[in-house]
Image 1 (cartoon, rainbow, N blue to C red):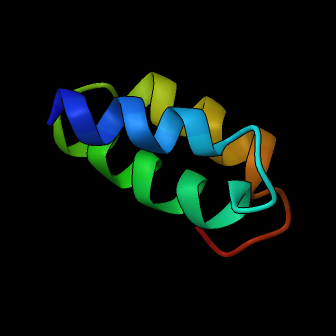
Image 2: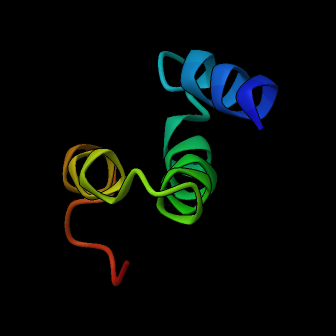
Length: 50
């Protein structure tokens, strides 16, 4: 799981940020890091249904 978190985290600085944020927020939520997932969704997915 740490590898996926690291990979998607690096992608947040690229044009693929929205897709990476969707995946990463799900991983964070499923690993008990809901607060971080919520902050990520607010920052990268504002206005989205997530």
